[in-house]
Image (cartoon, rainbow, N blue to C red; front, side):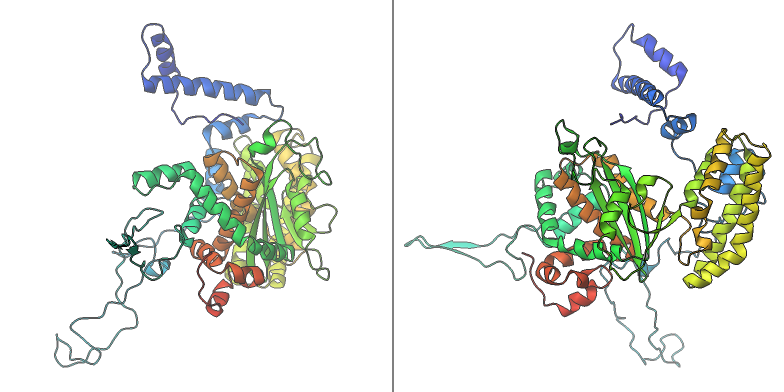
Length: 547
């Protein structure tokens, strides 16, 4: 695993003075950290330069971070006039239009009151007036209750995991020695850890990227201790009890109309050690050493589900295992991915589309060197994304959306591809140059990049899956690794459920809590406990305490 580079500003003159100081006096802690960061950076760059595929653009991205990919900003960095550039709403990675902000009314924050669905709502009656009373101002009219009440929002802080200590009074007989202890209040339960505890720990760890040890320190500071080992035991037990829901989620994904997939690297310590098992020998080569987290996002009947799978299999292999559960009478689904062959679910039949945002990114990377040529490509793709946003705003059916794109986007892309072909055919662009390679990518994958012009419901890009994979990347950034394969499977389960809730606009904390409290009903009928229908099952099920 590559070393982490501390975010320290390193200037050459400061670094030279610092090196001179090492000859005469010991360094302070800050100076030592600066020198260490410089050496670490130098070693990291040396490792990257030894790798065959390292490019200057890649080094710039790794060391200086990601820049915005808005067409306006990309062309501005390339030195072009952007007065006439209109960014497209709905375009990839920040391509949304910068509409003039409407004047904000005084006293109104960023979020409306109905955004606080998880808050406690308290109805406050007027203490002096009632419906039908005389107006206290004019004394002639009558007051009537308004439909919309006045709203006040007050937020308060509390520990992520709070607790209550019940001091049960005890009496002891002075003759027989028997001890009589007061009964605990109703609803306290027999377990130390309430179902909400496991739900909150899982949400913090796998939804927000807070490692167990970090939560342990926070809880200790708040004087409600919760050791990291105890946190793991709680979420591991929770995962065992709610695992049947994964069957329903996989079935929903398998029967999806559109499936997105991609993967990112991950570290699992017990797979990295010498002599570690290489996975299932039936479908994974024993020579494969990489470990990945695959993300799969599927859409079916207007609902979206997310699946995460960590192990040695690539995204295409994991998708194939999911699609093996697909109902036989359903036709092949639309699959959206990038152009890597390992993303395809061989040998299953799918209608493959490639990510237009991925192709666009190749153009963004070379825009500083070829601003005029890249401007034409970026503005054309921006218009295509604008057309897709307009189709969404009009709530067009898949067939109507297809016709809309064929009418408005088809001619634009025909002209663009004719121009791209001429750039190489007329030797206006060197095929081996960075721009030539970006154009070649667009030409070689034209059929799959423009699937949305032929197939109803085909998406433009794979951004939906890339956003989902940020869950795994956030975990990798903060926790660095999974210790065991079982830990990875637990993480996959919770990330799948949490992100599915986010896609469906469901409160994941309440959802995980409900699954625990109704684990028996969940095991009997997992399909009734998906995020978008669990409230119906909850209303029909008797209230039961968590086991």
